[in-house]
Amino acid sequence: MKYFHLIWAALFRRKTRTVLTLLSIVMAFLLFGLLDAVRTSFAEIGQSAAGAERLQTGSRLSFIQTLPQGLGAQIERVPGVKAVTYANWFGGAYQDPHQQVFSFAVAPNYIDMYPEIELDPAQRKAWEADLNGVVVGSALANKYGWKVGDKLPLMSQIFPNKEGSKNWNFTIDGILHSKDKSNGFLDGMVLLHWKNFDETTPYNRGMVGWYVSRVSDVNDADRVAKAIDALSANSDHETKTMTEQAATANWMKQLADIGLITGSIMGAVFFTLLLLTGNTMMQAVRERTSELAVLKTIGFTNASVLGLVLAESLLLLMIGGVIGLGLVSILSPAIKRGSGGVLNLPSVGLSSWALGITLMIGIGLVIGALPALRAMRLKIVDALAGR
Image (cartoon, rainbow, N blue to C red; front, side, top):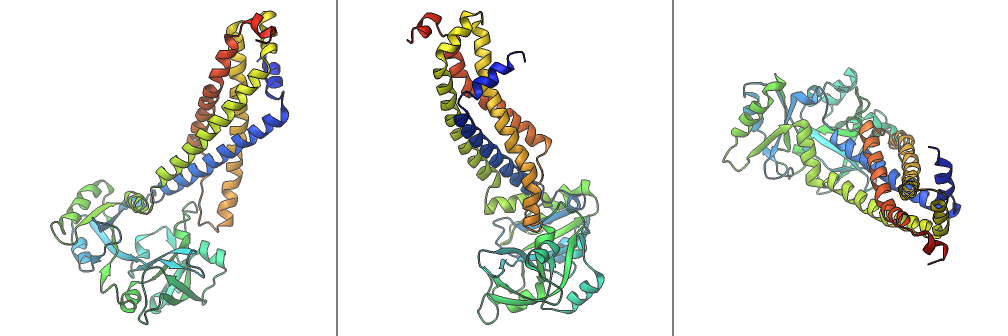
């Protein structure tokens, strides 16, 4: 630490260049933190005590393939299964085709399978009596200003109604809330009646998108899953049963590999950052050749000069990186509030900080290695002579 003033002075020798480089590092780690939060958010969907008791059964071929409704009764008779429900993907959008909302056509007992969902008993009774009714998540209701009794027009991206139009009209009968406020997914969905959906669209004809089963014993889930899949083995509707978390991850992977996408973007960003900061450090050391020679003249060893340049590189990355990740901690709650809870980005946790600091140190050492070695091997006579 006794040489910190030298390192700080060298780092800010060219203030404009250093500040611009720091801004690039801040933006890189801000993007890293936000993308890592997105990846973590998707990975945590389905991770709950109640979710551990639920199994999801879908088509082995693809999540867009449907299953016969009669399969539900067979699943219910499998030893270890406590209850069964089912749902279909509706693919709704509100006001604009690009403004999609998570909307599902569900069985009457669907909400019973999710004890983490709260719905006023009077509102649920009204919904059950209204075939054209829907219940909406509180996050969506807050975002769009929906209230109980409002008419809700939705455009289905997939299913037309009896008239051949993809414009559906519903009545909001209730607002559902998630007991777990960290689970923005439940607060951001629309549930409509499967019976109304099946009778209205000519393309469903009694088919089910997926089944959700609750098991009596979490430790028996693997056996139950295999028994459920055995029901449709060698048929034209073979199934694949997984835990809720695994099923959600698999479903998201068929839409897009979130981990691959975020990893690719972060890789491109940090590769660009490596080139940018590496060029900055090379220029900084090249400009100080005579100064480094003077340091060696007054007694600084080769190892000391090597350490000074590496420390300068590490300090540059640490300052920018810590500011970038700190901004993520501030922005994540703001993004959650701005989206009405639909985008539930977790704050930067210990694992993200650990990975971020590791990247800061790694990049700092890589970009500082070449100029530091050059400074260490610098010959005093050649440097002072301008060679």
